[in-house]
Image 1 (cartoon, helix red, strand yellow):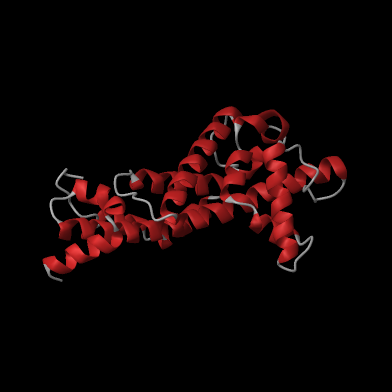
Image 2 (tube, helix red, strand yellow):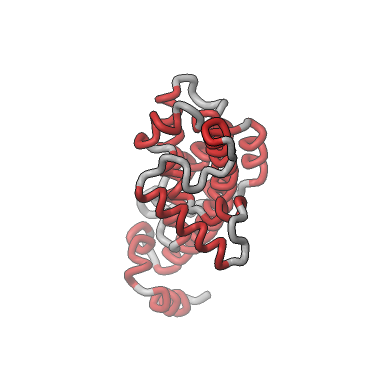
Length: 221
């Protein structure tokens, strides 16, 4: 592509969207190459965080079902688990979406309709005594031995992965982020659920190769 083509593309993508890429590079062509890399990195982040979301939510769902079974003689925890107003609202909306999709009351469909954000907040300090200590800690049996430390480290990883996933999903710049750390966090979190999950994700993820292929910028990043 010619320099004129690069300038035209930058105009189409808009100055505002390209500002972080232009600031990190020394020319329009370099800014576009970094933008292209960011697209590949975002796709890899979505791939990896998708694995984390599914594995973590299924593990947490199993423990919530165990919580309900021990206390209420039913595995259905929707409307029964001691969630705060936000959590209750999220479950209600997920049930509504499930009904609209023609799967009313289908447990797996409702779980799939709950966002990554719901599961992230579920491992927060607000549920430490009511859910984490009695049951949810078992979703991460290979994590730190101390239950408070385990919850704190699980929450930290889920928070960071939720953040970068949202950045990637909304086509925001992630080229200045430490994606190598995000990869480590994802594999650690998966390994705390079960080592085989981490081994599988490490084998299939493209994020490591994308990180290694990051263009060198004028800032040396």
